Length: 419
View 1 (cartoon, one colour):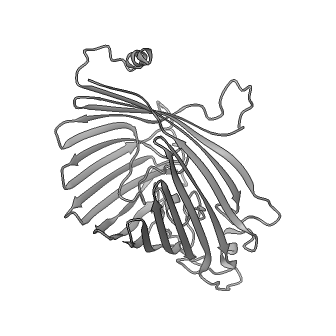
View 2 (cartoon, one colour):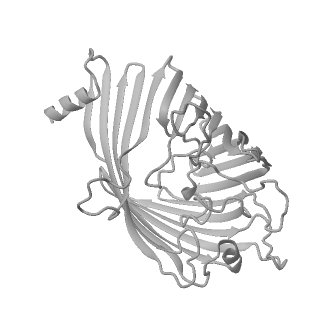
View 3 (cartoon, helix red, strand yellow):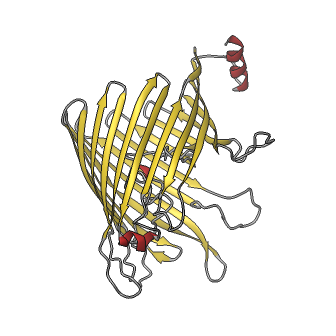
């Protein structure tokens, strides 16, 4: 262990005078088994479900010296068996998930630059997306002001696909430029409110092959109110601006009401509306709300039928749900039924208007804190789709569409140093 400590210090280049320094290194190994039988969409007729094991492996290095903070995270994501046992190279290799430096100018003001996670409020618009093995991070510069009751963050990014010497199309599936501002005020112990403004610009080529960037704005408040037993949240986001020369006009509203019946049992009731566009709407206006960089797996059902790389520029969604949580000792249980409806009309090419009901999903999950650094989680979900869901997503609603998973997360701290 003493040799390991010396090696880590040398790797980080701490050859200068050591003073008021902190170094923390931890690992994460997270394999997850999944049985997918109608996951993300209804199982197509004649097709069978499948199973696989994916894994995330991470090395997190955190360093602090007086007003300077650095973080470096390496990760590898893989599917078990995606390379042979004698492979000389990995399929995905090792990627840098986070690599940022932060300087604290004063007790309240700081700046952070580099690859970093942008996560705010309930992560509906900007989140880490931690369920995905690769998760989500941005190359950005952020400036922050934080005190006991107020927080203000400004951030921005400008992206290119290489170090070019002439104007070159940006071909990465990402924004070309982004700016945001987030303000939070904790008015009291019970009441907190935030406001987010996000400006995203995506590059495209017009009819004359000229490269242009259109900007779309997403903005709105997020409010929470909590007491000893009551836990409520509300948000309202609008989207406007332009995307590939098309006008954007969309919105998202939601409310959640939770009540702690006992110390161990909590019941919540919620509703979310994400605007959409009717299938027979011939206008060019984009009316379907896009949650952009949100942790969308945590919303609208765990089977990821909506807004997890799908259901964009569609009929939108209404989601009414009940969430029951029960925690006892080292165990956590949850049961979450969802009722899904379209937000806009679903009309067939034969001009037949279909019922707005899309389906019902039942999610059941559990968690167990096996040891200090080891947790086991799992779940089972089933989708009861409708004929309208078949029309929107294709596939066979009469087939049993279900999904099951089991994940083990091992997160040990392997090295710590403080002086």
